View 1 (cartoon, rainbow, N blue to C red):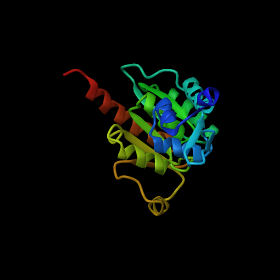
View 2 (view 1 turned 180 degrees about the vertical axis):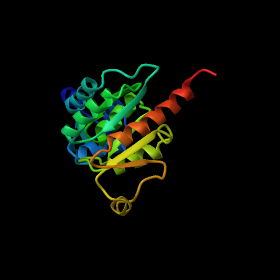
View 3 (view 1 turned 90 degrees about the vertical axis):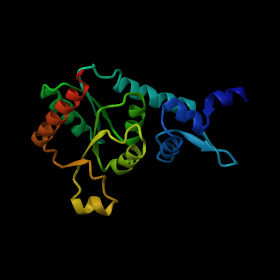
Length: 200
């Protein structure tokens, strides 16, 4: 019995380990991001090793937070080519920002629970938890309700509305990614954020 207790944990315990809500862990299990099984009573038992692997993968991707004079930007994009394009392009801009990149909404939530960024750039169409669901969860959480969010998508305005729409405060950029426009937006927002941090 002790061996199985070490091998598996409850949904609530997994949520505490990952720093996310229980509902997020349930979604992660349903989407195959975590290995689990159900008891006869319908309770999930999650393999501890699966949770630890998920945490290790995220720790390797994002070992540290930003410096005090930098704006932290999290990019949630599932396409590896676009992930690399974001990395190379944003790093070439010489802006005071630090960047982390994740591949889906689940990775984004785990990262957000450990290092709260100033800004999120999110692809709306990702496997697992898509950008719509991620944005809805963040806007429902008082901790993230005012975080800057930029949606980047190949969807038209009508297609976005047909999927439930986005909050009015979210900037939307089309694909292919208009990096010149994005740079101008980031430059303006970063200047505002850093002014807000300056001692009075």
